[in-house]
Length: 185
Image: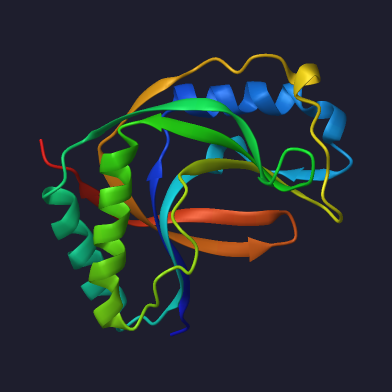
């Protein structure tokens, strides 16, 4: 059996996915320059694992479920538009996340530490919570925020961590849940 391209994330509620659809509509002037994420697949990544062997998957799932049980639910909200490296030279366009960001970062750090014994290297970059809206097709793009208008904040509760499979295809990635870990109630 082949390795599975895997990551750990919070799936997002319908109200957030609807907001993503609305923001992408507001950014339609960039349609030729950006490949947009499918709204039904948007998520808040906690840790990208890369290719995971089938032998390791049950152990990783068990660890994620254990960590989730020890973590209280998080109250989060969408907060504004951003870009990597910047909105003037964006390779990635994203929505920010506010609220219990400290709890979110603590959960991400704990997952990262618990994954190290499985031979999964920690991310080199500091964790920055965001929801990816789209990626530049070729060169970085400039996003004229004045054309977008204000982005309303949308509150949501993150209470279930998902181990996800990612399958790359010509139309972008498709995501499939492999297992869930409910946060402490």
